[in-house]
Image (cartoon, rainbow, N blue to C red):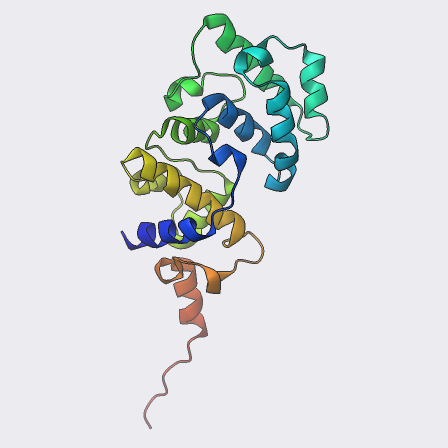
Length: 213
């Protein structure tokens, strides 16, 4: 598919180096996804390394006192995320299970919604499942004019795990860097020729052909 091919080629050249992209550790990815909820990447880049250094495993987080967890989270805001992450760690530690690789099982854990479940399943276990966050939703709605973005994302995501990982990361990266909410950089977009929103703008701006006299 032209959209996928162009998107992946762009991502290969332009992807930011982020610590949670350099690992397949389910715990590390889970921590990053909790932090990234409603928080800018630049902010998470400050907190993620410190948090992982203090609580390097899910067992160490599960055994921590609530006060210690909140101290490491202090300044990130939305503190329910930290409490839910702590509850999740305790649940996994108590049951002796690993962090699940199935999105439906992940959604039974504290603080894990549809997006986070898909993100952990794909980014940790390379499951070919969709991951629709705010950035992905915006890209897909603009490019395809789709209202049911989850259904569309399910159809678009490659079936091969490693390729699905890159595709989902690329969609989020495009939304974060190019297809932004207020001032999208359409001339820089690698999939502009496949984008419904761009084609609509071009049609509106194109001068009407003159009628013969």
